[in-house]
Amino acid sequence: MTQPSTPPTSPAGRGHEVAPAGRVHEVDAVRGFALAGILVANIGFLAYPGDATTGAMPIPDGPVASVIVALVLTKFYVIFSFLFGYSFTLQMRAAERSGASVRARTLRRCLGLFVIGVAHGFLLWFGDILTLYAVLGVVLLALRGLRPRTAVITGAAIIGTLTLAMLALAVLSAIDPPGVPAEASDPAEAARVLALATGGPLDFLRMQAALYPPLALMIWAFQGPTALAMFLFGLAAGKTRLLEGLGSRTRLLRRVQWAGFGAGLPGGVVYAWSTSRGGVAEVAGLAVNTLTSLLLAAAYVATLVRVIGRFPAVGRALAPAGRTAASNYLGQSLLVALVFTGYGLALGGRLAPIAVMGVAVAIYAVLLALSAWWLRSHRYGPVEYGLRRLTHWSAHSLTERSVGRYIRS
Image (cartoon, rainbow, N blue to C red; front, side, top):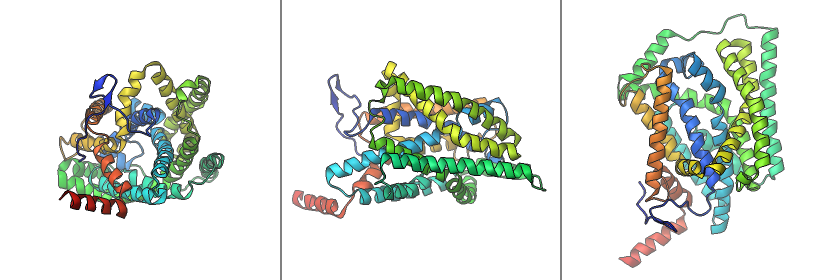
């Protein structure tokens, strides 16, 4: 845990949150908003672990599931990935200002993320994304010299290739359908997984140990290319400082909203419809969603930026969670596990989908309040503090600390 620091002062007095120098308020607010979508998309996997690990939907079929698939699923992790790329440019500038090595700092940070991700995946949430981000962070380090235009073109090529590949797969499947129908979910396996998830801490850990490695590989394979494309878009946006002062660019934001909602909402509806049908329709829906989910995510961000411009209190409420995003991401998993697994109340499989969404709202509200409270006396979140110590560590700084302790003694 980090040591409390002296509360920063402001014209209004002590006790007010002040972001560390170099942070961009809009980035923190958008990241805090994205955490809500990440929570809604993920909570069903532990609320209904048997169904989610043997079927296609994180929430059982029904109106709630359709809304989540259409409006949330895959939309918010692309925002998170974009912001990772954007924040990478901020960290590069910070390293250059201090005369530190961008390469060394990034590699240490990615190592820390990877270790945290592995622990997260085995102990709390088998759908962990941090290990993927750590590996792609090293790739982004190698590509950091790309010009913004080149980064955008490369990212667009990745998205275009994925879309065309899935469309081609859908066409081939329609022309020559498989002779053996796809296997339906196994009720016995679903019951076994649910029993492990809710049976007790050791049972839950056994489930995690069995599910996490294959699911991690699946996440790397299926989400990795899109995440890399979003990293590149974020890199380009960060180099051009796109999000700094974005609230004043009303015309651009309106265009993004019109294009994003105009194409993204129908695309989300198609995705939800196709997911429930399976087969060729599902593959075609995935192809459509690969492109339209990015447009809908952009529309969400543009809308949020405009809302913050009119109601600054919204940005102030979201920014603390964005500043402590890693702590919140792990905190979400911990609280969800305490509610739905054998770590705590073991309510997995016992709540209606709408009640699960109520739990998600409550968890998000609790973490927003905790983030604001924590930052009144700390500059960084608990996880961020550890990552920062590792990122900024060097043999030189270690020697300086040792000499300082020797002199004081």
